[in-house]
Image (cartoon, rainbow, N blue to C red; front, side):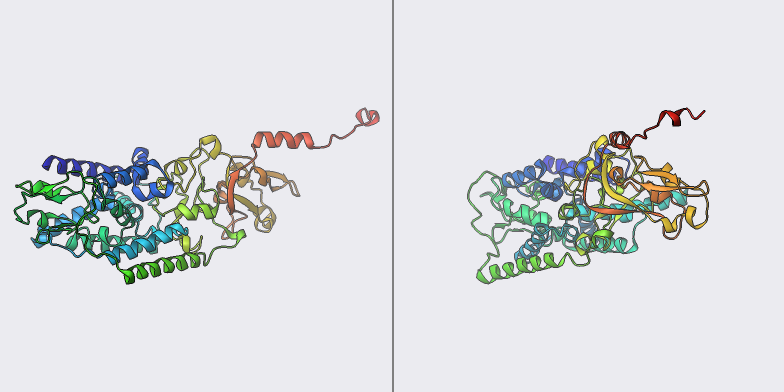
Length: 492
């Protein structure tokens, strides 16, 4: 059994390192590893979620110890806590009402499309935000200051999001320092959902007749779910870490198959508790309805990342893990505050005034683990409209200062901006919205400050634009041909 524990440590470490590398922005393989995380996969409806559910039905909450990066962090802080306090784990109360209440509430938020808010307790998103908002900028700053490595630009993050990420991580890590997997068994939505399946797992842990009640297993249990005196192992809270089996010298534990439910299940739900959970669900539903507060009007929609579809579809699935933000080579993506409304706090949005969406990049749409972004091929991405440009003639330097410019048209990859005659030999931009993809190249390069002469506005529903070459070819054919008389053709 010690070998299985070592195997678990190796796999969880490799998984954590792969995901950490994925948030570095330079490791595509690491970013792809995020696709196996339970709740993003659950939201996306991918096979990875089915795998973890089947694993829970077969053995228990395998994901929590093998695949969860936040679980890995809690294991490290819990280990340090045991060393500092010199105190072994103790039996913890089941706290089923807290776990079920939080689980139902968060699932209702997910169901009603408040994934951005629910993501503040979803383990992968919590870890991702901490990586991208805190660790990555800190790594860049330390490198630049020490001279050991250099970054031309440190990842910009709003101070409020940094503070929230730090506070949440400190609370979770702090609870693990004293109570190890307390968060996993009280507030984690993945732990709640997988725990329901683990309760009837085919090969869940039980005491065997050879148990001598030495309590060695009880002392090393991360979840505090083993009570030797009462003969109880609460498999709903067990994270399948293997610690108990590794220390047992008497083969007092077994995972022999059974189809029967546990004979003793602590904290059964009575009528009043069911009523309480129903109240929690209704509260979550009411919160979901109120989540649309502060949504922007149609003419001031933010630009969602490429592949988002409609704003509603994006808000429904995005958990705000910030994986796309961390991997954007143009640094044009950033976590939203209230640009989408309360429901979209932490979800990714584009910042055309800070950069532009690379015409030859489709990375973000192909690494989204939650299915909030549709995977786009590069040809599709080059014609995928995330916004549309608006030209403000009264702000343009050609009009206000009589100076020649044209920078916006020069940086438009689709030709949606043309320079047409204005006066005195000057030219001004003309917008062809049918082929504008809203990449932001024009807004980023516009020299006018503080309000730019060209601005990108988000669209309610993203779509494919017309093919620029075909559109222009058809436009040319539609132009009327001027009839020239014989006298006009030969004036002399």
